[in-house]
Length: 82
Image (tube, rainbow, N blue to C red):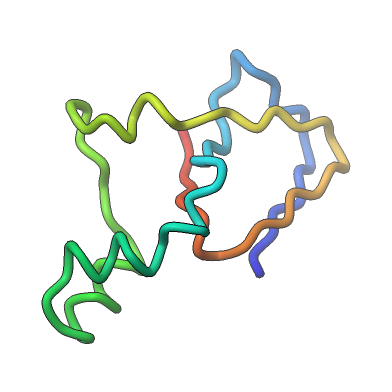
């Protein structure tokens, strides 16, 4: 489990946290398909960039948050910042 606590307002126009809803259900299959060994899988799973042409870019959704809000998610969910 991972979480972020927002100290300031972070609304739609501000950028902020992006997630791909439901990806945690496909995490294992995705990394098994894209990584040939355990070392590569661990390295790839900890940080990777989705290039602008990748269809996953269209699946990302912003998570606007008010000051004092906490977002909690399964760490297998692809997430990042805008």
